[in-house]
Image (tube, rainbow, N blue to C red):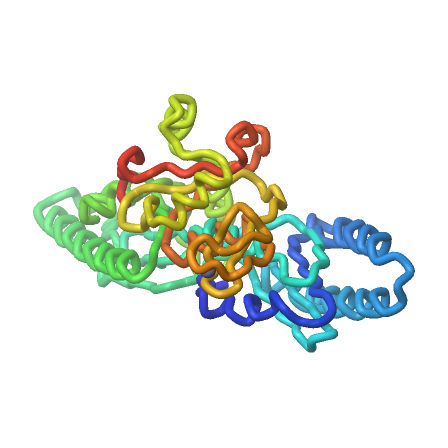
Length: 387
Ligand SMILES: [Zn+2]
């Protein structure tokens, strides 16, 4: 998947009104060796729960049958092309959308009058891509890596003469010259590779650099990287050069998945201190007001920290989209009546529109005492390293 833009979300946003229901499905399309796809069992359990929920209403049952089979077909078709996916089906409205995801999501089915976007918006916020560089002394490949896949960005080949092994000849002036000449060429090649890395880094918002190769070669190469990029090397791993990029891609992808998990689990340690000291903004209403007043801000380094979706309701102004804690009240800004929406969905969307960083804490107990949502204002948030 490429980065999903707000414009691409628009067709889904338009499904917040309409006849009938929308079936939203998130699925883990992975397959554990030799077994059924990961999504099958939770999909079946989810479908059973929905059958119970719709009861005996013939029309609702027909609609659910159609939506479930449309979604199931999409999941079967997506096998092997995507690692995770989001699928939305509303047959009554003739609406269908499948979006491949490269961020882990669990399998779940949600039936509602509007699409359930929390996991999708979360995936957009959580998305991280790494730049992996596989190199030896004279050739290299650059990959963009997500937990789902490694994509080849560029290949670089240097003009480096082979090692000279002339048996019987003693190490002499000639050989020293050849060795020096070779070393210069290796350096030239590493400089060229560093330029490619710089180009790729500038064009994408990578979360870090992974270097793959022999230790000595990597140390040599790292010295050619500009210091600001060398500082972004978050992982190095051994890896012999291979003419089979597929093999490297597989290894790199699994390292990408591990790094992703590590970084995702990491909330700035200062955050917990601020929280304990009562310096962070906590609770639904206070967080909403901080979010909408621009006090968190993209330019500053404030951020939001969210626990799992609490399925709480928020009021969204039908005219200006202003959010308020009161789902059926009048909009605090323009007095238009509000309509109820999902609190997490609206917060994620607003943060996305304003470029506000969100960190996620998956253990619900950790943020529960704070209403599940916390805002750290810029004056308290230290500038994150390298951002
Ligand atoms: Zn309003």
